[in-house]
Structure formats: structure tokens, C-alpha cells
Image (cartoon, rainbow, N blue to C red):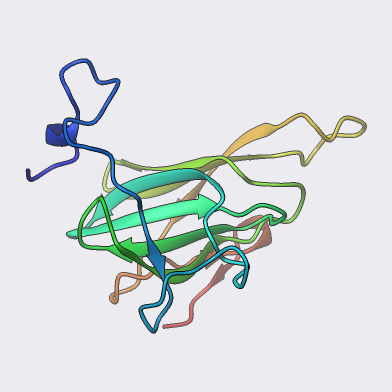
Length: 149
């Protein structure tokens, strides 16, 4: 199978192949466990493909960051690479990454601009950039980018 689309069954409700456990590895190749690493996967996962690499992005419980790991297969394993987004308010547990007109965008939600109800969410979108190495440039508050190649 060459594309993610080919892995989806005809009814689009399930994968055409058996489900597999996704593993996120640290830089040394060890599986990242929730008991000893704050960057472990918790929820709100998303996979996209960029330049032949698969990017698994996700959120972690009790965190306001969106992390990512890179692999060469949509089933993994994936190696942790860092943060995509450092939000400035609330939690950003749900997101997606989408290409539009040769640019890549992060869609997410946060409770900024709210005065009383912090359980509401504002949908937002911000452009993301990739370094030559394939790493994603981390975005800080108000769109400030941190480049650390």
C-alpha cells in the first residue's frame, strides 16, 4: 500500500488492515512510557505525511502542548521530535494538520478571548513550517516561531 487512502476499507469506518499498536520511541529507541516521560501520548492524535515521512502528532494529559514524532510508516514506530505548538492559554488537546495551496496549517482550539467560561473553545488556524531536516518549527504564543535546527 502506497497511501493512507489505500489502507481505508470501502466503508471508511475501519482500516483495511488489522489495527496495530503505535509506539513512540525516544531518541535512544526506547518506548516512551507514561510513567516516566511527560511527552507520552495521551489523546487527540493526528497523522499526516510530508516528504515521505509520517508525522504522528498528539496531546498529553495535564499538558497544553502539541507534541510530534516522525516515522516511515503510518503504523510506526515513531521517534519523538518535540513540540509543534506551545499555547498561551487553556488546553490544546484537539488539532489537525492540513495542506492547502502548498502551505501547511495547524488547526486547533483554545479558550482565549473568553471572559467567563473557560470550557468553551475558539477554533484557530496557524501556518506551520518544516526545517530541511524534516523537523517542524515550534510555534510559541501569538505565532512566534522557535527555530532550533
